[in-house]
Amino acid sequence: MKNKLIIGFCIISLVLTLNLVLGFTPLAGYSSDTPLNVYPGEEREVLIKIYPAPEEGTVSVEGTMIEGMEIASITDASNIYESPQTTGGEVHLKIKIPSDALVGSEYKVVTRFVDKTPQTSTGGTVGFNVEATNSFKVIVVEKPKTIPGTESKGIIWQTLVVLIIIAIILIAYFMFKKKR
Image 1 (cartoon, rainbow, N blue to C red):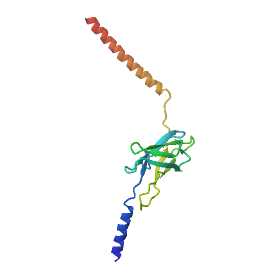
Image 2 (spheres, helix red, strand yellow):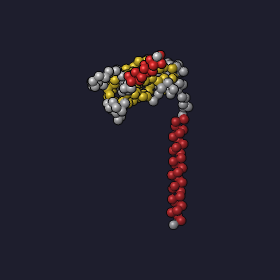
Image 3 (cartoon, helix red, strand yellow):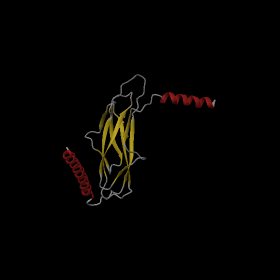
Image 4 (tube, rainbow, N blue to C red):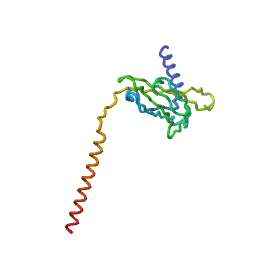
């Protein structure tokens, strides 16, 4: 009797969850495993793409910041994003690290997206509010040191190589011209 009750509960749970499909997915190029590395005082833009599920078509999504507001903000004019199925929607985040941030500091940036697409009634089905979050880690790293004057040395070497190539071409031209 107890086994039949457990099996019945599993079957009912399976039937109820079959139609649960997330209507969209927010994706960024960064995560907890692949963090964004920035140095103190640096400012970066991060794109979060919102891809609707194939059966959804275009979705309308509201984006808000949940965590990391001290370094990140949504820079778009509106926080409502239309996300076409073919291209997806783009959310622009500005990441600005304070110049006095300690190297090794870690921040977590979390954004929440709520589906605001008008639901059409399909007789007898229950509608759910669909929401998804995107989170990634930001790690403050040491700013790479540049040796003063190295930029101009690179240009000098490039110019010298170009002049040598031109000289070789001219010498070869005049040698062949002289033989004729």
